[in-house]
Amino acid sequence: MRAWGLQLVAGRMPGFAAILGAAPDSATAVKVVRELQKRSILIFAGSSVNGTSIIDQLKAEGIQMGWEPYIVPYGRDTV
Image (cartoon, rainbow, N blue to C red; front, top):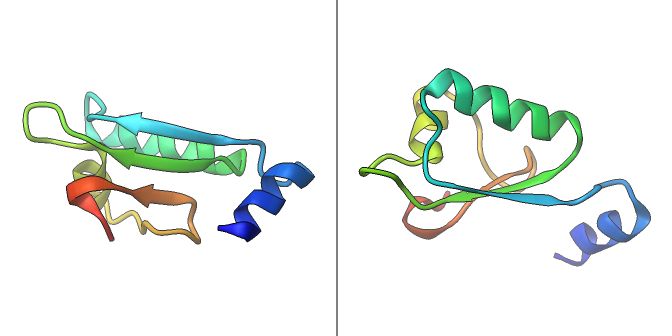
């Protein structure tokens, strides 16, 4: 966690985003996450809408999640 703090302070990571719920579809979920990754923004994803979360959508598209790719699931959908 300290390393992430250093990146935030040094400006190498401009910030973080929390994504709650699901995107309208899996393609939109991937597009949103890829745009945030391009900007080196750490993404926390969780929660669900009608039983579906953006984590489910990303898994369906084969997107790797965890600290290294900057997509951190939380709650029931932890990696």
